[in-house]
Length: 131
Image 1: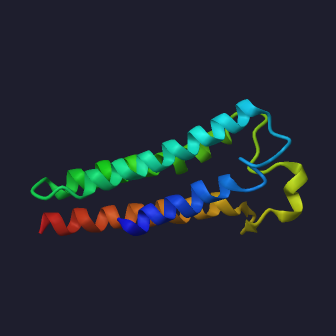
Image 2 (image 1 turned 90 degrees about the horizontal axis):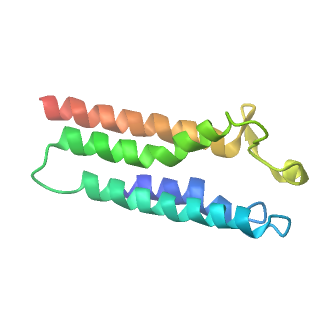
């Protein structure tokens, strides 16, 4: 679970504190507000996921599924945001500094990896709880 929380911070919060986001002088204050809102929401969702997964004596399968769903929200939200017209994973002014992996923006690639790991961990807990 600590690894999952670290992944949320590394993939979603820290990149938003870069010159491309929160400290981008070209962003209007309202855009910065929504970026800050997203960062706070992501950390809060991670903490809720952690709280759902940790209580002893509860059904491990249900707690893990709820925790995984809550923690997956920011990554799924990134994918959903790309469906809106005029959105992009990076601003053209930062094209030279943007990392791509297998043709995908680095954050989208990492989100897919982390969602896959989250699904695998959830499946492992479900299998273990059935035995």
